[in-house]
Length: 193
Image 1: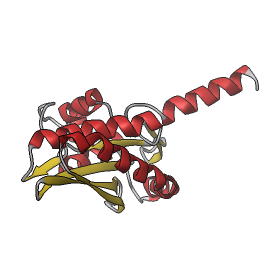
Image 2: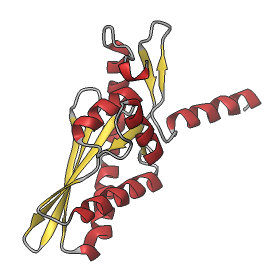
Image 3: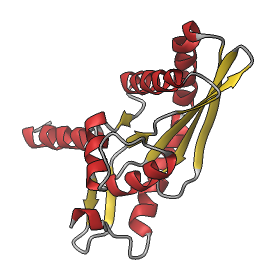
Image 4: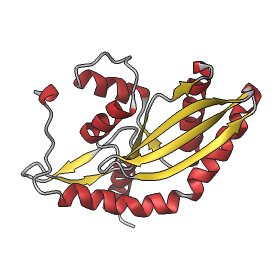
């Protein structure tokens, strides 16, 4: 392969594996391409210790990124996006906020989660949602008997999400085509003015 071929391959890898959403726009402002970055919400806690939800979110982000399954928007990219939305960079990333942020920042999907108390333990629910349409791509859950079960539960969830990765990656081409096929779809943000 020529040097220019390696450079092109490296640039494509950088585009696809960046820690933030990249969008390519046509001359008239239409989105024609987006990379594979996912955005995670701040996981909620219902009747369970709220620190478990935060730990679960951080552990799942790490597990998914280490496997190369997806790229998660970095905390700094999220804080920067919140600032562009004229919000404090520390406000919680709720599902509603994540949907708006994903559209603005070019993330192709949102990973949302909740820890619900159930008996003596809790259950972790994770949903992957297409950013463009709100279509649910994957729903999975894992029982947590106690704090010591958290990492094993996260590993099990990450394995199940990886096993569904082929379906999500094939959905990715649909996500891209919906970005480019949407009539009049343009980047538009008053907070960027």
